[in-house]
Length: 298
Length: 258
Image (spheres, one colour):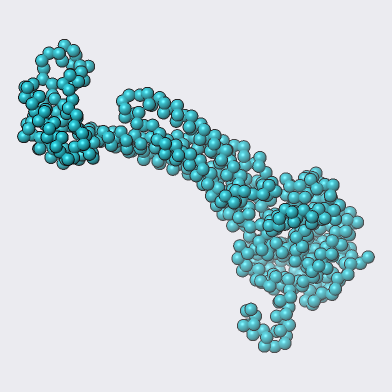
């Protein structure tokens, strides 16, 4: 393929350069810009789910709903001790009562919270791996002898619809990515066919002089490759500018889950490979189109 | 060699036939050509072209000269019959082997068919470049050819800026630059003055002396007198007549008349 790209200067003259270039690089640039944006979106979502999502799914909150504050405090200590001894628990963080009351202030108001109303004791725990329903139920059974009025909220349970939505969006971005690649291939095929028709006379003369199908195909491959390269550079530049700008704004947004939706380093690598892959795809499409068309000639 | 297995050596006439097959450049056997569902353009053509021979193909307009030439330079396959070319069956020849055969044939098209965006030099060099000749090796023969056809000064000119006669000379130079084994020319002197026509015929004759089989389609009956030993194939409504009776016999040595 690389050798096909490096045509001697005199062979390049057989298909004038001004014909295929023109709208073609710009169309490829636009298609690639959209392809890269959708790829970046898919990669960021996947990264966010893998990082933030997995982290959240491993977490759970243990609530001790005991009205008596002294008994609640005693149970909190006892539950914390049991939790620290369990091998499936990676981390136990007993949330101070003051912090819990601060969390409730926006909903209940300062006056109500400062009054002596019962507020559940909270213990944040992190499992070594995301727990399923059976694990949560087993944990509850284990803790009930120590604290009968206990409730365990697994974050994965309330995150599940969100993860489903994210997974659907990732599939959607992948489908759009494939559609854009198909559309780019179709654009290349149409452009090559148009150019082939324009230069049919030259190709026929080459054929009559013993030129092979691949010799003709190489002429088109090179032109298409150059157009795709130019379009790729423009498309990548524009897409990178948009991704960096949006990335900066997303990073400034709370909560932290959105901050995880940034493009990782390997995402940039994949984005850089896409224009090169599209160039290779365009060259293959050009070769296939020309060879298929020429096979109809004797 | 399939003809050995076919028992051709069983009798002396058959041995002569085997010799003929080995010697012929082109052999047509009962060939017919039909475009689409129309009437046959060429009918029952049977003839043999020998190496180093010179043929004029004549006939009225519409007689089928260009169609016959298209069969000779492998632009069409016949509707029926058999064609052997350079010792191979040209009908069943796989498509991927056609380029190799076409490189052995030089063609002068009636409408020249020069590549419009290439210079005179590049048009003439095209067959050599297609054949993979290195740039350093083709500069000398192309320059020599440009000198021969008197267009050295126009080496960088595009075909659109050349006169009809100049374009025809470029087309001829392009056809002969690769020293083809067979040269097929369709009205090659139609647009040039008599002196240039004679020079071009001398070029054809010189190539012919080097062993190239030449087939020239022409309306100009006077050209036939220019080359002694040349044979005439006459097409009449798609059928071949052989007024010199030479198509089925080895050709006489060629002499260019002064």
